[in-house]
Amino acid sequence: MIYKKYIKRVIDICAALVAILVFWWVYVIIAILVRFKLGSPVIFKQERVGKNEKIFMLYKFRSMSDAKDEKGNLLPDSVRLTKFGKLLRASSLDELPEMFNILRGEMSLIGPRPLPSEYLDYYNSFERQRHEVLPGLSGWAQVNGRTAIGWEKRFKYDVEYVKKISFGMDMKIIFLTIKKVFSHSDIIEAGNQGNFDDFRKNQWREQDAERNRQ
Image (cartoon, rainbow, N blue to C red; front, side, top):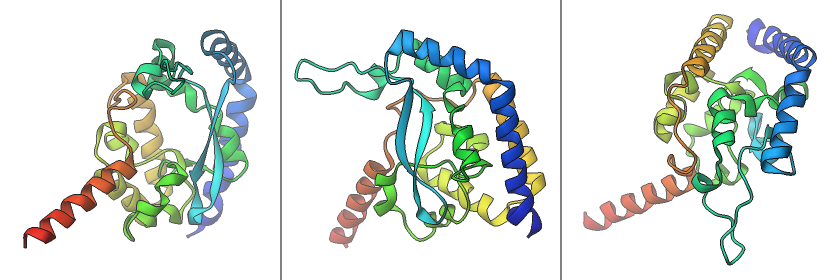
């Protein structure tokens, strides 16, 4: 398919370049605010899984503090996420540095959201299909519930996108993403959704328990 193989990448490069060159001042302002309110580092870096399960380093503006308990352990995400961090996430401004991931060919504007590398061992064969395309800044799952839907539904939408990818679908997702961002809908706080690895482990335990009862 011409769009998937060539045109989509050209659009990604042009859009990322325009975003960085036109809104460079937004990057500077957010970086200064993050430094002032949360300290260093300004950029949050984490290994994520990309196309064909290749690991890459994802960049985001930092949205959580380094608050620790009396033993020196980091407090839960829900506690470390400040009001400023919540604002960054609700507006999706924390995602702006991912434009550089797009320029590097590690991400696309639209695609399944890249998830942490530690989740790799927990996908089934159906879910792994989400890695057949570049991960995206936004995706089909994000405009159908964002972080408010469960893991199985998210993966169902991700794989559906992989199978139906087209210019029209990408434009629809971009429009719906902008609408979601401005309406601040389908957003839950950090720590409330749960990690995928914990979800899958619990699922396996339930399946084992069910087999033992049979």
